[in-house]
Image (tube, rainbow, N blue to C red; front, top):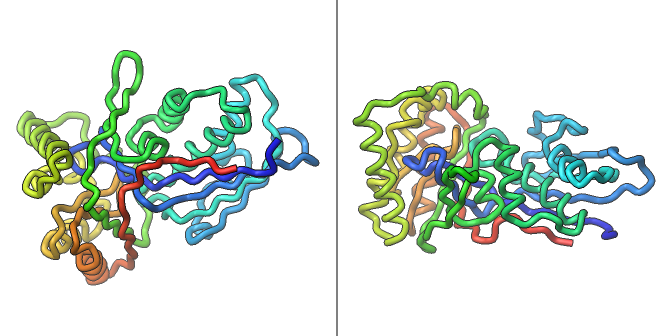
Length: 307
């Protein structure tokens, strides 16, 4: 029995515009989850604390209802073993409910910690399918677990995830406002049906995005970082969104998109990342909205378990 283990899981940005519910990317911003056995306590006992920059913003329960413990508990149940008493410390550097995959980090961390505790009965591929089943869609949990930029497709056998080539010299500017936006709310405003013109346009954007990433082609990336299926409907939930995205482009970004369901906005840049970040922040401030930003790079490791 180990004394403790740490699971570090990256933030993720889903969709990248036209890759709606298909593409997710891991970023160099992390939540860390420390698991320590409490041998003096009964099975199923859990003690959870939240620390870090965003530890004070938690609006989720710090008990057995917490998704980290529930994911952890699920694997023990599946193996027909008692869930050991455990203390879990959540060190939160990823802002919650901002479209950066904070909930996915919790799911992945709980599953990986339990798998390590159980001496790894499940493969990475099996853990991925369990994480997708828990989350309901793959576009955050897949890159959170695997790292990189991941294309996830639904097949007859379940979801299949494929890494996409991404230029190493891209900077990922994430600007996140002070307000939160629940994914359920953001999904509710997206219609069930779309016009043929919008579907064709988005197909062309998606092709340009994937080709632009593979070829490191700025012209293709500028075209590919567009969307007509979800962002036009969600912008009403994100005050200042069109203006902040325009400010990013005017400052030199290749393009700007809604990060996941929002409200964070993402800009892809080359060398001008600081200028783009400052422009986005200034525009949101002009709209009366406080915000902060992170200049990230692509995380290629994914979730890591440290003993």
